[in-house]
Length: 234
Image 1 (cartoon, rainbow, N blue to C red):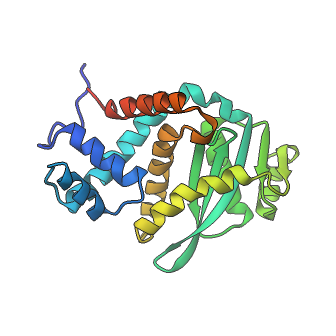
Image 2 (cartoon, helix red, strand yellow; image 1 turned 180 degrees about the vertical axis):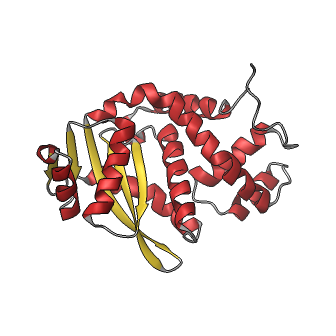
């Protein structure tokens, strides 16, 4: 049976929808910025259309990216870097837990209201259920990590130390730029949804530019764009 296209009820072409969603998620742009960029290219859409497309297709694109990259994620079992960052939702502080592997791939994002052992357990169990158990887990000195890992029988895998967790700290920067452009978040559900989609798009286009020669970087960028243009294709 042929799989139905998710674009079948839309008059706008899939290429334009993919472009609009990529611009909004990948770059620190507002909805109106994306509308203006598309208008400069002769594409007349409103910012509300861009908002609808992101909510409708963002999770679909992220799911398709994860399916295509699942075979390459086995290396994520080698070493994880865990860190948490605070975010404000309607003026109230929440925490976004994030797991990054040794190559900079964002493995998991999880939003909680507290930084206690219970929240750390939920985050770790969710990440390990999807990606298996890593050989090493690098964290900061937050006690919740040690307590959670001890209960899971993985305390011996934890490593803490100055500068060891720079990989996770640096991975926060692209998300922080997007957060400022979006003027923060209004609901926990919206934050969780965007964090998951943003992680998948970041993984697709992240090519460690400083570690690659110019020809290799151009090749990886072209491959990533070609993969994006084929997302959710019939």
